[in-house]
Length: 123
Image (tube, rainbow, N blue to C red):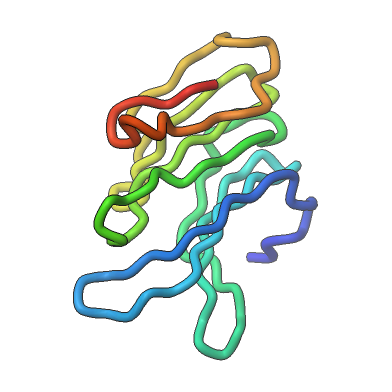
């Protein structure tokens, strides 16, 4: 799938590592096509999409990867959309862990709480 088919509106970048492997660059993007994508930079310098969600029904305005304390694999991310929904995605199971509807008319930011990144996020 073409990551840029409708234009990326927002992005978050971090490093991630699977068990026993070296760290790599991971990018999460939100698009005007209503999707959220997680991509990994290959050793050849190619950004390869490894996961995608089509949960939202309008432009995705903000995405944030949940920080890991051990530098482990990226598994949880948050997204906010012009559809008024904020979602927490579990990349491992491709499920929505939780969502908030109508928190704001059009939420355009989401952040993990730096003091409690495993349990709390801020919009």
